[in-house]
Length: 307
Length: 302
Image 1 (tube, each protein chain N blue to C red):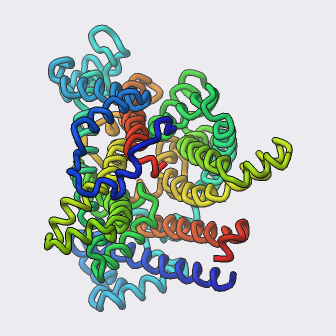
Image 2 (cartoon, rainbow over the protein chains, first blue to last red; image 1 turned 90 degrees about the vertical axis):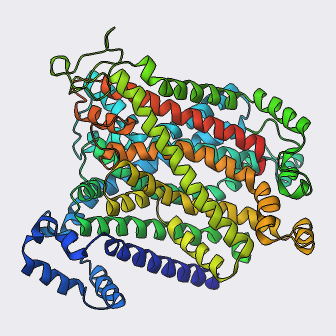
Image 3 (cartoon, rainbow over the protein chains, first blue to last red; image 1 turned 180 degrees about the vertical axis):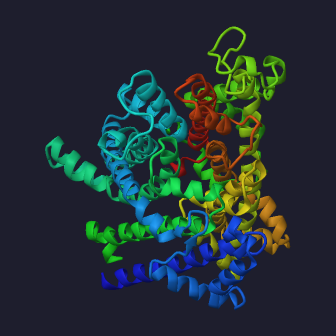
């Protein structure tokens, strides 16, 4: 168990290191001089450009530049957004709250309805209910979230004024964005859970459980559902990353504050240091969540721990 | 889902050793008949065919200029003269929607062609030849797959700047590691089968083996992956357009049109509803085809 934990932890560290290298190189890949690119319109003053070049260590080897940058990141210093005239860390601190709120709400909806629909259809395979829900799941996955969000706005904010077109950060402003963000994930998860349930129901231990006369309830809950949920855990971890990335689009549709919208604005304004910081943040959270899911696996399934 | 499981999985992995990729004529006909019976596959094919035909025939069906502005007829709701209404510049939305499909669908095809080609090539190299190069390729792939896909596409788009070409490259780059992972896995599975050894011992060159013996066996996963990704690529390129990072005005592209629609959402619902229906239906249709092909070609993937 300890060895497993250590191995996973080492894997995570290597991965996060790789992510930081890739994101560090991102700024260096911008055509032209990085300092001029970062400064944008403020680059007209040669003295300012020179000062930033010094700060970034652009005259030093790439390796030294990387170390300088990582040192900053570790102390929560992502540089200065010349476009917004503020520290990037301040921008993130200001915008992260609404994004966490939205992501958690959407994850809750995804897990709740994904599991519910998946288990129901898996157990009732071939029924009209199964066909109906699975058809909707495919549609939910195929419909772009930005269109879905716009449609919800047309229906529930413009035609029927139940919600506001520009949502606030309160609970009422959360309903439509969370639904929009969750829907694709619900479809995906429901399909995955369904196939996992169907697979598990075919296992010999399920036949055994039935044969020895266990109640249907006990077979379904204790044997089928419980075992079919193990692989689902990994998928939920992956979904969290997609939800975080999806906030980029959903926050823009609903004009909600958040780091997703911060990222889009920063890309459009060529505010590269903000782009770098937000991409780094989301990627690292994604990597950590998936590692945590991996690590929690053997706690739930002793067979994995034994391997 | 896979109501029609049966003969194919074994043949897909090594069973078809000496045979040509297309198998025999009769086998293909039987397979085609079976595919025709697959309901979701057929529905998908019909939806996609109708949309593609409408888009290709846009110059004939939608005779109004999709980028011609008309200050006298802005924000007109749908009517006989403008089937889908007009936008903030008085442009005909029916025409914009049909012409716009060419950009969205064309871009998604370009994405899977570029990403699929590069990814398959690297996947075969990593899977068949392995070695230090293969190892390096796979580690980079691991790293790229550690990012949520759309985030990686946005990051690349941020570096390269807005525009359709850059958007296509950005999404294609995200697609490469997905292909590499799948093709590498499938290649490793067949690499050590006896018939591949036999071919090598008979003096076949590495690239002959790859072309004649490896690729036919990884074809099924590639076909399924490609179909699925045509849909995802269309959604992502439209998403970039929607965010203002893809196609630039006044070019009509579904995502870019929806961006306009979002801006005037309180004024005209038609600007959001119609282009979105096309995009959504295209996504649904392609996914139905992908699902059906997965059942038909590669039940092991489900």
